[in-house]
Image (cartoon, rainbow, N blue to C red; front, side, top):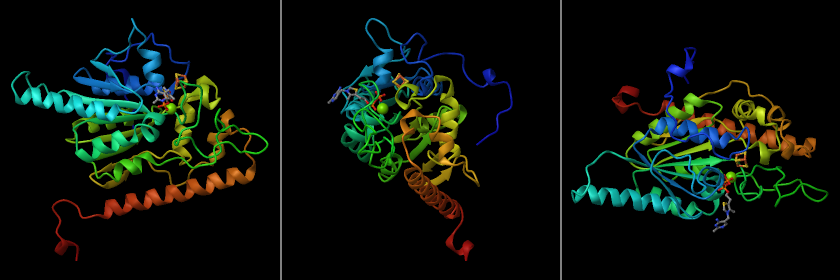
Amino acid sequence: MQNYTVFVPRLITKKEYFAPGHRACIGCGEALAVRLAGKAMGQNVIVVNATGCIEIIASQLPYTSWQVPWIHTLFENTAAVASGVEAGLKAMIRKGRIADKETKIVAIAGDGGTADIGLQALSGAMERGHDFLYLCFDNEAYMNTGIQRSSATPFGASTTTSPAGKVSIGQVTWKKDMPAIAAAHNIPYVATACPSYPFDLMDKVKKGLAVKGPAYIHILSVCPTGWRCPADLSIRIGRLAVKTGIFPLYEVENGQYKMSIDFPKLLPVTDYMNLQGRFRHLKPDAIAQIQQTVNKKYGELRKKSSASLDYEQPGSTSEDRE
Ligand SMILES: Cc1ncc(C[n+]2csc(CCOP(=O)(O)OP(=O)(O)O)c2C)c(N)n1
Ligand code: SF4
Ligand SMILES: [Mg+2]
């Protein structure tokens, strides 16, 4: 990842495509992530938006924050609607009804809309090879309906439908690995991102838009309301998710894994978890279990990444390597 030490406002457009005035909670990581993604996407896009926090906070008739063409979809069919928009545009261009302005299709949904109820439509769209970018804004629960657990909620987190108490430690299942599921579809581009690393996020959105075919970016979005953390710690908590290895930043380009940022030594998971009320009840044995799992998964990712780096480079032949 590049080290930016220059004057930041010169590097980012001042234009807002996701305008202020919406109703997100203070410190909402998801709203910040959408704003940054909007800056990277620019004007020439059609956004297909599932129900979820972003749709609820930013598109209440007669108001909208969206400064680009935008369509609301159901919870379950975001990727199917995006496929239809993409196919429709292609057909109209082919028939000469409209000029080809290389408009990009961007589907956006939360973790519930992606990992749970919209997964079938997403899998179909990726498998059919539609030319679109899918952004999953992962705040690790069904937030806008009252903090219910999703399959992306991490082990041990307390939510209203996985409450911690005398007989339960909260969520008893491990977070579904959505980027791995997307990568298993052999699509050209998969990445993880977090608004605490804004330039990395925007670079990845630009890359995802530029590839031909499906692209998937999984964006960790700190939610002070659901994670029971102070609103002014959103950026710090996002950074700690990365620095503890809980949410590594990486890309999978045409099957090749690459870490966007790597740490020879990870911070302990408690640096991240202790700042959030949803993990407050956890005892040392559960924390040790989480630490072990994070270490294992991070090690596996690193291995995949270095294996990809060792992979045959374009231009080299098998004879060169012998
Ligand atoms: C089929 C269906 N079931 C349930 C709902 C109610 N509902 C709307 S948004 C939502 C939760 C969204 O969670 P997520 O996708 O993670 O987005 P977030 O609100 O967390 O940003 C639910 C349960 C619905 N609209 N449609
Ligand atoms: S509930 Fe969480 S994700 Fe939703 S608007 Fe509030 S802070 Fe953002
Ligand atoms: Mg969610």
